[in-house]
Image 1: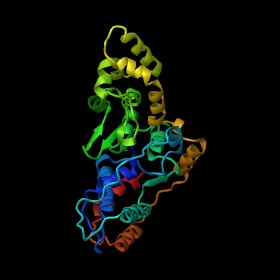
Image 2: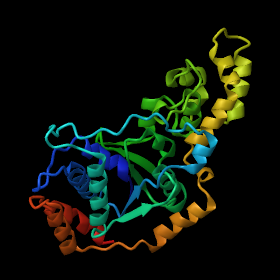
Image 3: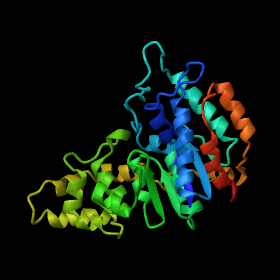
Image 4: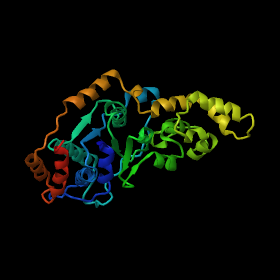
Amino acid sequence: MILLVDGLNMFMRHYVANPTMTNNGDPAGGVVGFLRGIGNLCGQFSPKQVHIFWEGGGSLRRRAIYKDYKRGRKPQKFNRYYEDDIPDTPSNRIGQVAFLTKSMRNLPVYQHYIKDCEADDVIGYCARYKFKNNEIMIVSSDKDFYQLVDDRVTIWSPGQKKRITVTDVLEKLYVHPNNVVLTRACVGDSSDNIGGIKGVGLKTMAKRFVALQTEEQVALEFLFTECEQLQETSKARVYQDIIDGKDIIKRNLKLMRLDISNLAATQIQQIEGSLEINEKRYDKLSFLRNLRRFGLINFDPNSLFLSMNILNKW
């Protein structure tokens, strides 16, 4: 098994909830939670490799398609445990990420950063193409990855502490993973400021178009043909609304797909290069020195080192 970790997603889960402080009185919950999380996953699943993907500044291609993509997002939350006299700031968050990426260089994991590219796209490329002959587990709470789930690819949900399989996607989104993108293109995604067809939800799509629940991938033109036929015998507005929203759905498909269509040739070359030249190292002493400099003197690394030993065998 190969673990593909959505780095910022995992970091933020711990950053907003872990109250750990350094010996100097600075917030360190994101760092400690991330390290323990990686250690726990390695101990539980014994992967051959762990790849951590960091955000590269966002997708230029998506913003070219839709200028309001991801605009209006709520500011990222700060740690809810910190008191007023211990201010939590963006600089602290950035500092924790910087320290974390530096420290991880001394552990037998791989880290990747592709400029002007979303981590989601890089993970999607690796899951579908680069590691297509391997069992994959993506570590993220982002539902955008549900489209990648099949018999070979699963998702570890940190919040639910369980693996998301094809069955789970069907239970949560009411459609098969192969049809998640088309369904969400109709519904929209408010978290990314992507509007859909008004009044159309996941349950409506699954109920009106049963084919979406099957493994066979439903084509966009088939959906429109279905709408044209069904509206002749039904008074439901949803069919005409979908036909009228054809351009919106086509745009949303381009925005939501985790596919090479959203990657430039130069970015694919960068991904391939990062995967090929990225050498893992295991330097416990340097790792411990970094912890002390950061002020995490009381952090016990033994369980983490034990988990890292599993990776170092391969």
